[in-house]
Picture 1 (tube, one colour):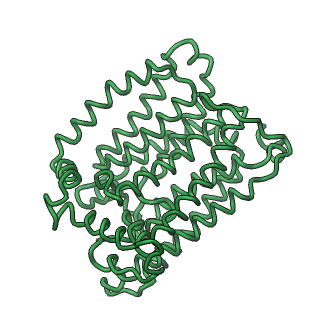
Picture 2 (spheres, one colour):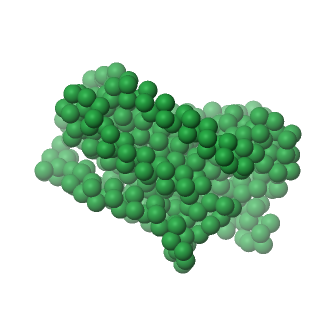
Picture 3 (spheres, helix red, strand yellow):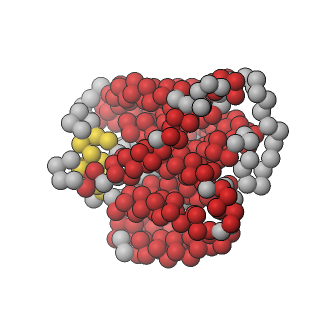
Length: 380
């Protein structure tokens, strides 16, 4: 059903995709093992137990599992019937970090709200919400879209408003990921090329302007183009990451035996966890990581492209593309192929809100993989 693609539709008694579920749980388990190994040395340097980051991540797994189960089991038509409320709630939550006393500022960014026992980053849940919203609204407006681009303007403005708020939180990378995922939904839904030409004409100069007007982003670009520019500043983390990746060799040093994670990669348990994985598991481990993600993505795209219903097809296509964008951006950053960003590695990086966002996406993908017969009586 996605634009330009066609595969044989799934039969009505098509079994639940157990291979998708198996690859999903294998990714989650591998991510936890990688987090335990990568974070133990840094936890010790903070005077905490080696398993501190690992145990903290485990505490987030219970709410993540609840959210995963809800997204996997709640009928999609139920979500569609409340799509306006869900979207407005998601958009409104993006404003919460700006409320004095509630929002929390870290390193010049205002992305979090303080819940007392923990913090929460609303933009992580905004990303799957915007994919769900666009798949819903573009399916409803399909006939209007075929008659012209006017029907695309309201959803485009809503997406733009969300991305603008995230950008004002000083989180350009998350805003860019959300915008790219939204663009994919517009594309597979059949939006005309003139629509994308207009987006590029507006987005390109705004993107350049956002970099040129920010000293922090300019320094990151300079550190990317010329790593020796600030070897003990902006370039320090990426240079440590590159050394860690290069030292892994063919088979790696062994899980838990990496050394670069101990000091040359600050906050290695977060955005740069893949560097620790590459050092300890080597080139073969990197290939295994890529193969696992490729298999999971193939199962998701296969299901999405086989759907005859536009909403389900576009939703599945957009959700797995969202996850892959995050994976590709994170790995490219660790490898020094793009400037440093704040995009976490799904299932691997430490962070409660990131885990919740990934759980929501994974749950919806599993929901979409349910056999058609299991949906009879629910989606009415």
